[in-house]
Image (cartoon, rainbow, N blue to C red; front, top):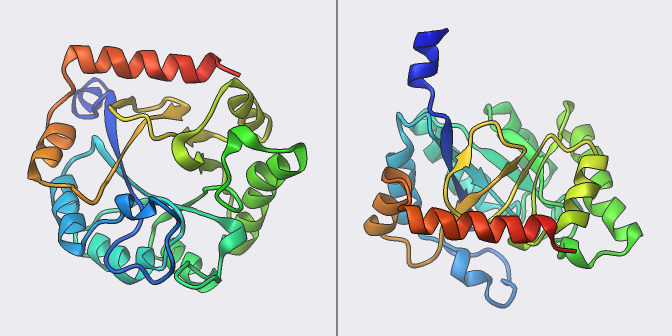
Length: 229
């Protein structure tokens, strides 16, 4: 057991991907910033090979998850967690039911990104139930196994959002806060790929820990989000 502790890092860097390649649907305003080329994705996947401290996630349930990402993950013996918008399944350019099942069958994990990509700080009680409870139920029925992890749309959360997620028995929540995260933390910061991704970003985020001032700023920002309401 002591030897095992020595080889398992206590912190991880979570890398998040949105769309890849040429979009197969009309993007929301500003969404193009989060799309990357196939070559950019491959560079990140290559950097993740053999790295137990790097975890890969995908948001939004885009068709590129199956068409582009999945075969490249399998080629490298990598796994990832795919966070799906349950209410948008089957829409043009999005994953459909068969696509979600294909990811699951290939050994990937399925989580919820909510129902309709709403800001979770601006929900009515009915919308909150749909986003945080109903979406999990629909995905569980689809894949035939428990779904209890979420990624928070837009990285927008406060103490009320976190309370609702705990009430929904969510076992892990991913944000977009940046930096590294404690391996077993319930709230997990992620680093999202952008259209201007390059080797310098990969070196800075994947291969090196953030400098102390950056870590302090990230911690302060996360603390404000957790307590605001």
